[in-house]
Image (cartoon, rainbow, N blue to C red):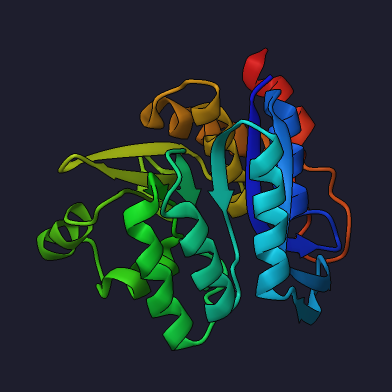
Length: 261
């Protein structure tokens, strides 16, 4: 069995963060280890409190896992502070393992989750990442563009890692589509599914990047992994359990079952 590691924050409601990552890994049949960076008190309606994990303990969690397991891929999610960013960078810079980095610092609603100096520091992880998976807001902030014109695409293509920008929307043939765009080797590849009109989207970004991680660990190419992960999220949202009173979680197990049937 392939083993993967997620370095991310905890969601007490179980829909996003470490919890979503582990559910996704389990769905795809890989074994998931974890290193917590931040604890949250949250539910489907929002976050009420955040407690940072000391950077020294983040280091110890990661190193202890690496000392015992043969890790096939690493997913990085919310790092929260400069101290944790620096700690993670020092560990991954010497690893020869696929790194899938989800630079979590702006929510799907557009709310900023990190200070500006920490956002700049996130960019230092790009050279050690195989692929990064920012949402539309994060991509605009990271690459300083308003729209994906030729100049902004050139900036993205000059990065030391591949990039998939998620959570865009487009109208096509009277249908609203959900779009993710991969920038790889100077080429652009678009992945899309039908956009589902629902509030049950909590944890989709985390689950998307952890699905990519699982599939890369299983030997799939980046393009294959994104296509599979995109479809997985579509089915997981479509079959969401519709629980909670806010942005509800998705159905990881059911999403995988629909994907493979």
